[in-house]
Length: 256
Image (cartoon, rainbow, N blue to C red; front, side, top):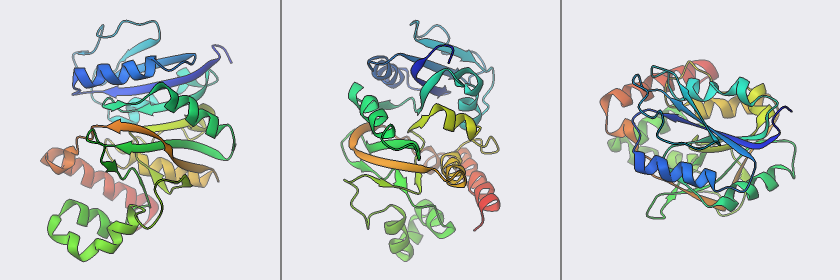
């Protein structure tokens, strides 16, 4: 292992709130581990170049918006055999330094676990349902169209694991991509995210790929993070169409 880093992390940047991003980067830099942070800039004009000057940070200018999954995949060759763990991190997440050290300790207890993630809270401390069962078409439709929700209450309830104690760790079907901690070699072996998804559903897809390798994903609510969560596809037609396109690709790939 050439650099022998304990952890690497990647953040894909596009239209980010600089204040939120600065807080997220600060959280990672405060973690007491040998680390490296990759900032993948998907803007055409290299907006985030020279915004953060720290020897721990490596800036990668893509020059165009290649999407979430493809952006994170830019670091695969850079982290291969270089770090023990790799964090997929959103630019609007905050957490305490102990979160990563404690999650790594849990990963080290069970070599069958490829990925671990904490409980996720909104800024007002309300719980985000970041771990879910694999989606059904009816559930996705009901979550997007309010008038359908009364007809699929049980489906949504079960899909969000509300029938389970969410204060206790368990192996979830899929975990949202705002904060996913992998064993680096497992992430490399998975070849990262499927780049056919420009945005949305790539986090669900990679969990399916972990299943194919007979590995596990651990939801670990004893640690908590805060995530702003923009929910862009609920407010923006273009993002809604992106989400719909990704959902179609997902179900064509994995079945309905």
